[in-house]
Amino acid sequence: ARRSVELACALVARQGRWLLVRRPAPGLFAGLWAPPAAEVGQGEPRQALPAVLDRLGLRCAVGPEVARVTRTLTHVELTLRGFACEPRLAAGASAREELRWAGPGELGAAGVPTAVRRLLEQL
Image 1 (spheres, rainbow, N blue to C red):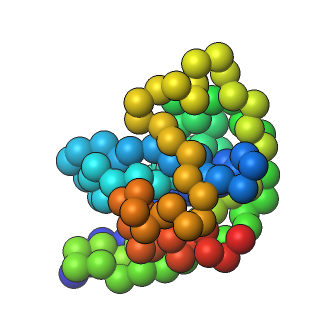
Image 2 (tube, helix red, strand yellow):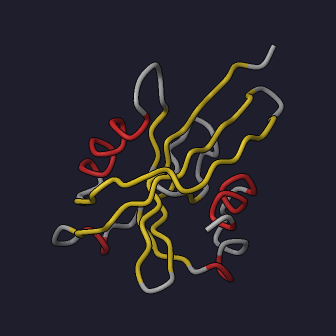
């Protein structure tokens, strides 16, 4: 049986480009690029994002849910919930190796999972 996983994704945009972070290994989408995200348990998904953003050196106001994608993977029933986030970058955050900005035309070549591309295409 597949386990259900729900990720709250911080959709941070700047000048038409999305903020992406390299996903940690091991784990879902390990080594690929995706918006900062937190696995959601029982509770409000928006509450999980500030701590994740803070660990990356980012300050963002987490806004409303603006996109949602559900995908069935080989071992996981995955739901991605995208929340609009207003960036207030901390000093040095954009220079970190595990962060990058990518525009819509760059997502395929940037190693972004298909489920994440579908989430961003809704915006």
